[in-house]
Image 1 (cartoon, rainbow, N blue to C red):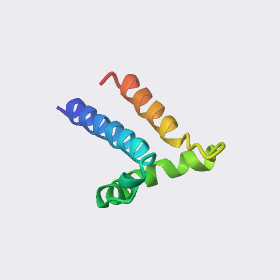
Image 2: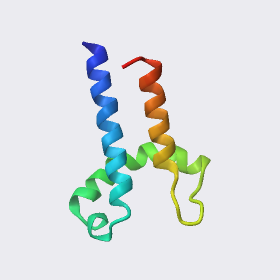
Image 3: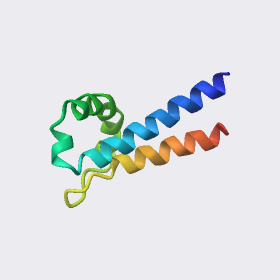
Image 4: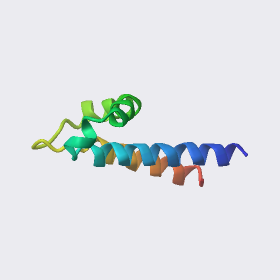
Length: 79
């Protein structure tokens, strides 16, 4: 039961981070109300990674690092 809920939450976070990263490339999406709320949810999770690895040539790699961490946690817990 708890594994199922934890797996669902991690999968949801993975989806939100992925949508945030893709949406950041599309100006119409970035200016939408949906993206505003998505950014408010995901940015606090990305901020520690942005301090570790600042954008390189305008490319923000923090979503990639967060996705790696989420997949690592999921694999570690065997979810």
